Image (cartoon, rainbow, N blue to C red):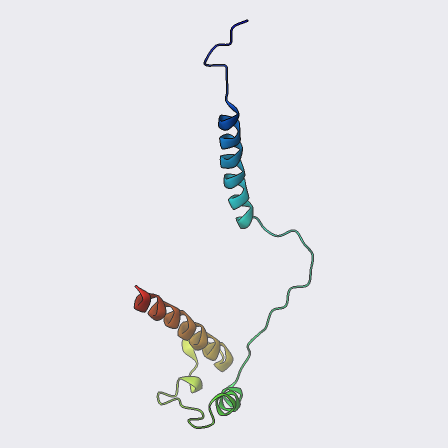
Length: 105
């Protein structure tokens, strides 16, 4: 019996296909939703200006609470003061990360 070259697959070819297949589906599993029903802890930050003042004194007693533009007193887009503080904190974290990324290059 003669084997045709086109029907013969080397063991290296099979292992290569298996490696590519596992890489593709292994990485796709990272983006699949989790099916575990464990409790997820979420920390809701409903902070007021008083909470920020206490936190500032605790984290840096030398400077304390410093808000020269009085942004913590504002109500952006007709929302509550707590929502405004949450928005400002989110924007500060985001812009800090962008600045660190820009510094690294």
